[in-house]
Amino acid sequence: MPVTVAMVSLASCWGCYQSLLDTHEALLDILPHLDIKFWHTVTDFKYKDLESYKDGSIDVGIVEGVCRTEEDVHILKTLRKKCKTLISLGTCSTYGGIYGLLNLTTIDQALKRKFMEAESVQEPNIPDDDVPKMLDFIVPNRKVVNFEVFLPGCPVVSKDIANAILGLLKGELPPPPVRTLCDECPREKSEVITIKQLKRDYEGIPDPKKCLLEQGYVCMGPATREGCGALCPKAGMPCRGCYGPGPNVIDQGAKMISALGSIVDYESISPEELVEKVGDVAGTFYNFFLPSGIISKTVRKAK
Ligand code: SF4
Ligand code: SF4
Image (cartoon, rainbow, N blue to C red):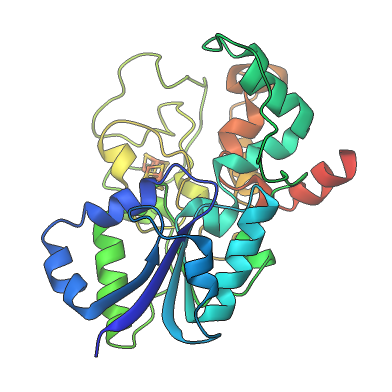
């Protein structure tokens, strides 16, 4: 018998469902096993369609995105009630994601910037008709409801989604990460690293074989879990940490700041120069993880 599935999108870019569709021919293996009951991203379902199911009557719920509005919270709690197993798909749902950076500002400032001040705005106006109330603070979805499975990534790599769904159809949960991204990165690393200068991504052309961190680029590999196959370093770009913290790492940003602090040669670059060179400290070290970090409590108190 096919597995019944309901999929919702909260605040997100829809990239994780795009990644699901990008599994291409693997869909031929997956789709015959699924009976999709609700997927408002691709079909004209209404929330009342989901609400009409009996509690616990749907086998699997999949959540993309994080709660940005009261409506998001309602749909997430409704999905939890209707589904036996809940999968958190992607980094926004799992850790708060890029939306979490909005915790550093107020709703009023964010709305003003987006609808009144942004360079692309032609008719400044903050909409208020039929707009769900926005939440003051973003938290990861697991603080709103329980999940059985987490599949982080921005977006989740397509083959991971396919493997996870095929595994779940056999009753197997995806294995937890045991290594960091550096462990699966093919770039050459030295036993001891010392950085004499820091470089922004656009500065210079990195050596194609050597570790990017050793070359002075802020690569989040030491603080990030395995899973993506080191996609970005393989393509010459430092990791931004989108898969979330490595095993036993509580706070991804703090871990990376600590790792960086321990390998910088402070005779070549002062702490002040380091901070100035990084520029956007929160966007660099907490791009995907702010609402899940220890720092989140401090940010909340300060608001
Ligand atoms: S720091 Fe980045 S480039 Fe260096 S080994 Fe780790 S993931 Fe690879
Ligand atoms: S290398 Fe880092 S930023 Fe790139 S996909 Fe992997 S975890 Fe995400």
